[in-house]
Image (cartoon, rainbow, N blue to C red; front, side, top):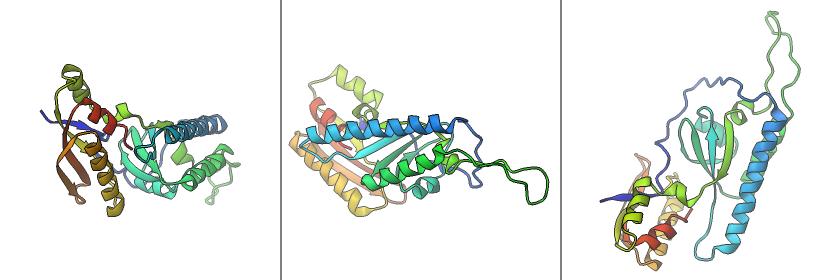
Length: 231
């Protein structure tokens, strides 16, 4: 039976244009501090992991819990590379510390809260001010580093528990990025790591039109679990 490793949470769906969200958090300082602490904690965990891992290059990939969809353009505007998204979740890769610094810089401006109401141009009452980048950060409930368990399906986990010693046929689904060089590099890294672990690469398939990049392997439980550690 075919089982899979590293399956994104759901096919990406773009939020509708005309994005006008409601307000989920009214204490901008507290919400900003909670998100900033989660980001700092994720980076600390990543740095510790990078010092421990020697057989592949870890990447800082964070999983965002959302209370509503965030348009793809909002992630790009924040300087972030979106790997996958759904109504309730988004997966982001931070290419370097500059991307994370920009994210936290914008978060600090959001923490300042909205300005004072101003009279409307038509004279009908006052405007309802919003905090800088409020629509973006108000949609985020939490964030954390992606873990190996996020990359393994329940079916694959159950199969390994039922037959831990036998070889298994499984797919590795890669985060799809528009950069062909980056995508090929990730696939080559997994193929090389799989070979080191004794997992045979049987086939691979890439479709830019469908946003799909997948490779089929055959290997034992150890190979599968180690491949699930790859970012």
